[in-house]
Image (tube, rainbow, N blue to C red; front, side):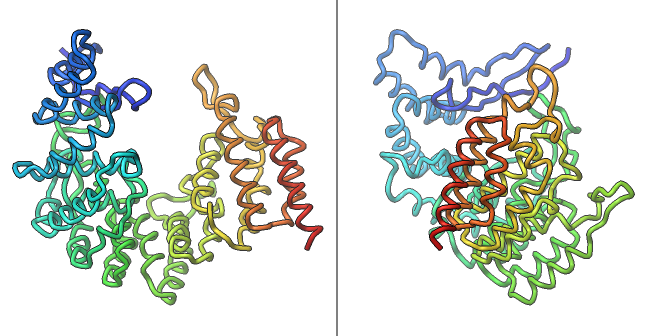
Length: 443
């Protein structure tokens, strides 16, 4: 009999339910775990009132096997009560290290800190605990061959610092502690994770074999960058030069842009440029290339307020060997726009000029399938599905251009407005062009 481990995913709050829990998949038929059945029986009960359900879920949140499932289900009924319960579990004297880490992630993800009823002192309390946990055996806990992606103190610190694994916009100030720098540096060379027995329906390797990566380790350079300690520059340069994990090298480039002094930054740019390698077809050789890390380096420069990073937002600094398809072009532009929001610099004129002169980018904005490859089939990522996203990106483009007063771009914006198949883009483009023209006339 074929048997593998899978996920029963009850997706986002407001849709069905906000949990992920394990389940078996036998001959393609999912069998829900006993823990999930126990919790969902309470939620679906027609005999219990809402208050009774909340009380019963609070009890189940105290048990190891049903804890996280119960919290996510309780949150759908009473978010404020759920945060109080989770904070109580974190503070409980008998709570294990793993439980405390789980409660920290639960409380500080999904933007809960900004919601009504969030315990005012929780971030400070969790920061104190997490820093202490890293100092108390964090290196030994982390620098082992770990199956899957288990929670560790170092891993949660790295995730939180880099806004990974659901963390987003958490105030990092309470978590800054220079004592962690040597520990994090030593963890840059932690082993890769190994495949676990449970691979959630997608068997990629034998149990115990290396996965070739470690997602928590990949984020450590970002944490070092945010800590702002120059002791990390030398080890991060070594990571950028020869670490086998592409993502860790990429994050090292980002962190070095934040940490390294001006002379070192200039030298790094020269080194990364000189290590550009292309094959006979003009594509990057991914095994040797460091050129694409300049995009991450540029993001790091912008994070420290240096508009020299705008240069490296250009599409030639791409994570793709080629980007002919609509999804790749959309991703490349949207990621750059996220970085450039709020940036004030005349250098943005150059960025948008190269974007508008790029046939694939303009083809996407024009909704012209002769310029950008689109997938085929009933579930294809085509202009019909992508239209809202593309229109939103164009609005962001216009907002950035307007905010920076880039009047020279008015002609190109109007050209797109007049030719696009999207009414939304045509209307927004004409509005933007008119604003730029009025500003130019008033100067």
